[in-house]
Image (cartoon, rainbow, N blue to C red):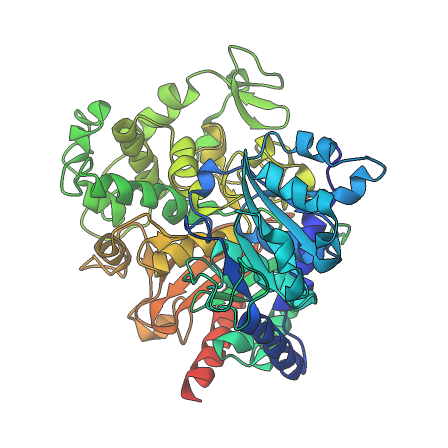
Length: 606
């Protein structure tokens, strides 16, 4: 396939250089950039949208390609498109010498949606217009047109939606893709006519439905007030709190900061990138298991006040039987915090090669025997002592239990359920379990050099030992994602369950699960929350009482503060090469959160 050979990570990382980082004296530069973006917005117009194709919806049903017919800023276009969905790039330049674009059309046969970018120069070539009109007969085509409006007449016979701006600069290349996906609304109409079809007053309006990628000043925040993030991350890396990290900030539905720091490992051989995929550890609980519980609760398949035994037959003769699901979600079921399953693995339980007898992959060169979970792990959990029921004791066993319940009720493995129902339709491209099945090692940040259990550097295999022994898919750990995917998921929750024109949850469901639901702890249902004990400063000194989210053992967190319109994502691998406590001792995550909080509060006072 002669597709445009753009390295995906480079393409996507370009945006972080282009827009989202903060550095000294960045404020004035970003003010100028914002003015240039607004200039594009003031004349960008959407045509031929009678069928409401724009903004794109139902991303789980779309296979999307981007075709460059000659736009010099196509790297930026493709970078932005790929923030919203997987979009495969092609370029007509790869087909030079061909009498027609037939070969390109052949290569697009597996795509049902194609974004075609061109300038007014390319619109003068009849073969390009014919290509667009022919392709539109069998696929959903969207035209991104940059250049002089006098050339709109070339599209008089075109029925595909067209997003046009007379601007041809980098800002135009960053704005038009966002209109296509609903990060930015289309609001303008033609003030003069250019043809019998594109007359004065022509144009369709849309609303914003997804994240916008922009500069802090677009959300009223001074870029210079975010400089402290750079200082704190540098301190963290010097103190060996983690070899690298990624920070993302979204305010009011706008991603205003997304920056990578340090390296994958302390040897500095692979620089961190904003597109890197991290082991989320316990953030899995609220990004996979809890959303599944929420969906099944809405569908009335799961009752929070029903006892575990009603859902899990093997629990009926154990101390778990009468414990209610609500207690499990609040960590008040009385479960012990943790069982070190790896300590019980015998030599005969694992093999260096896969086979019918050893089918479950734990790491490279490590396979556990068939039914190990059913024979060993599950009975230990079911029969573990119930000692602290009614009090708050954080326990991973809770989400082993919830995974079993939701899989029974849905009839679907947890990893398949969340991918199909949430990640894919939301446009989350990296989020999921078992990332080595979908991505190269180079895209995944390594966690611990495990010298005790698996005896290998863990890259793309879950750090948590129990989750590893069940094959990498568990209710408490095993999820991997990059910062952008986390922003999408939690913006949906900040939006009270809607994103991209789709409703994933009812607002009252989001409110219930994320609000404090315990009389004995700060917890919501599944979600962690702001701690009312002032001396704890949790999750940060300035976090509001509306804040909800979760942390992860590997050095991750995501926090949503509705009072500030904030989604804050912090990803790191603090367990590389071995576990470091410096991230917590230095309060790195909370201090960064407060730099953001102060910047937003200052902006709100102005």
